[in-house]
Length: 414
Image (cartoon, rainbow, N blue to C red; front, side, top):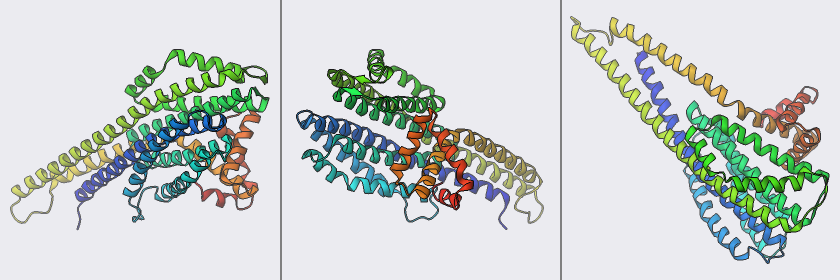
């Protein structure tokens, strides 16, 4: 019969296996972060290239495309290392579905770039295509964060996801503001959308600040150029802080340049987040292996001691080991419960995104919307009501009880 000590050791080995899986996830997230930054730069250059009729950023855009292709190969290689043949992969159904969507978007990139090169597409349409691809990549990062079972690693993943999401909203604001200044005017709806992008950034960076490591926060503070921030804020007030109306077209380039400097500085923080995540996984694995060795050595020593004192054929373990094993089991139970409690706290921010995803599913099912249309509808409702996106999503979900089959539709997206 297998003893309790065998299961105790097996539990620790499972924990190590999960941490090793998380280490691979951390590497994937880091590679995705580099690719997203490269895509954000390509998106910005493509936007200006198209908006200028092909007179600006032509050679630079082509150089950036080459960099993106290199990053894309790294991402595809990381996807290829995932164990798709295992039905036991943690969060596998949602993670693999997200990756499938991303790969479809990557396959469409060459055609998008050809249309941009030939100026056969409007800047707004091109930007929307890049936004959709980046959103898919961020969804992969979200699923990675949601699958983490170690509280320390989960905190680092939540911090990284929210920083990357906030940075993406910053990139969208760059494109939106540049377009508004270039057009020379902005209406009330445009100002509302601009303010919503600013508020979305602030929400993400607040969560990032709550969960990030102290060293990462110091890097974030050091990366902030006060002069750049002041100029961005000044131009924001001109664009969306006053009354709707005309804007100075000459401010489009200073706005774009200032936002680009900010985004490039944020890349330093992303690098630090990825480094911290990798070191954290390595440290947690080393600690878990050391604890496993200590447990195994203690159990073997106790069992050996009981065998030496026995007169005849002794049982596998005696009274001393019987007293020690319950204590070890209790300690293991207390540790796992503490980890579970902390994990629930960490995941509270992820649950807000899940509410948005479920609300999108509800709108898609009952209004025959695409995923993009459902998200835009939620965002428009949030802007119109001056409420947070998650609050609007929860209000939409409250309708589930009166919509037939709604719970089934939403559970398929949960």
